[in-house]
Length: 151
Image (cartoon, rainbow, N blue to C red; front, side):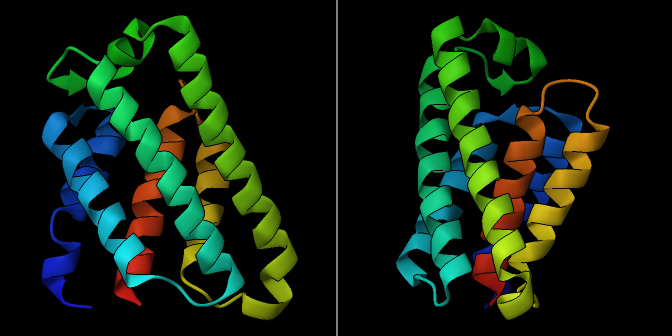
């Protein structure tokens, strides 16, 4: 894929590492998810990744509408209403669990897919996370979008 289609993802990835997403980062990530959806996918794991990205996009949309701050960080996550925060985290956890299960099941078959790296990085991030795992989930989404657009 052309560099133009990946434009902005390195900045979003950096913002996720710093745990400070601006509204423009959320918009950029949502635009790249929509682009990946338009491209489509072949292979079972990639189709699952696209479905997961669609769910993640819904959660990003909710974060963008519910957060009043220009920068979404740890305080922004805590400021979300408890029910909304729990629902977002639960859905992101479910995405990660489905991706991890698919990764385990497909290692023998499609194990060379670059999207598998995203799941491995997520699992490592989760083990090493000191704060909210939310950032590990968002990092996995950025990685998945990048792998879907690079193919």
